[in-house]
Length: 67
Length: 133
Image 1 (cartoon, each protein chain N blue to C red):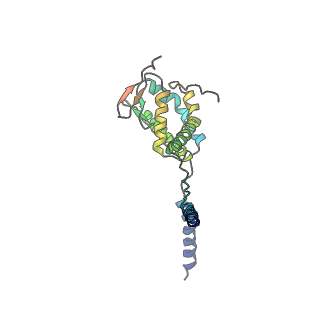
Image 2 (image 1 turned 60 degrees about the vertical axis):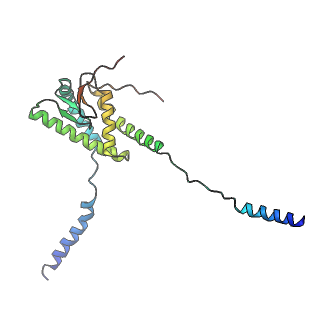
């Protein structure tokens, strides 16, 4: 009986030693990066060209929505 | 030995100028570019409305029929200004010149009035039609 208990305890210790905690690296989704770049491009273009396009007689600038 | 000192001085000047020569050219002034583009806008609008020029698929102006020398010079100046601003915006948005041109082309297609010449992605020219209501 004592031997079985000892064997059980040894097995428990051995199995606990096998527990492996693996930390996955943080992944930044490519879709998110593309969206950010597209937003930056849209903002830069709007900042520069909206004035000019509004003044043009052959361009129509849709009114922007208030946030 | 007589010329050693001037030669050394010249060498030092040349070496001193190296970092300046190697540095990137200064960014163009966007306000100055915008002012010039604004000044050229009425003439460009007139040519667009008359169907003599169009917007190509690289976000530049292109002749659709024979232009006068003065008109050609105007288009050249406008396209040079556009290129300078696209390069500046690409640098600011940390992206490529092509990405800026592609986004501006899309914006031009959306904002252009009906009847203007536009070029699609397959290099085919078409006149914009009225948006269906």
